[in-house]
Image (tube, rainbow, N blue to C red):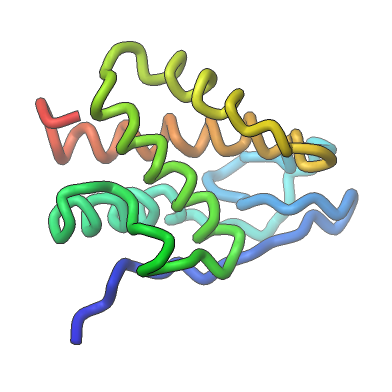
Length: 139
């Protein structure tokens, strides 16, 4: 039996402020306090893009229905949000960055995790670069 989707089991907490985030890339700081840690998940963007491309190739959509799959870790939650964002964007097109901001504004329950909004937006923009290269003209 094949996998439903590609899992990316990773969660991280900033040792300085306790914020949950993914320290991807070289100098991506904690989105809450700005600390640039030594720990890095360098290939998070490529893995997230690969998960979306896998879903799209196997299911015709970037996201997996909740009854089929649920995110367990922070990285999987972020990939899930980004995948749903991509599905909606594919229907609307236009300026991806503006669409991403408007999409994330729809989440009313950021609460104490409001710092994640920009973090997820930045991740979505990076994933978009990879996915759009692989699906030129389709997204």
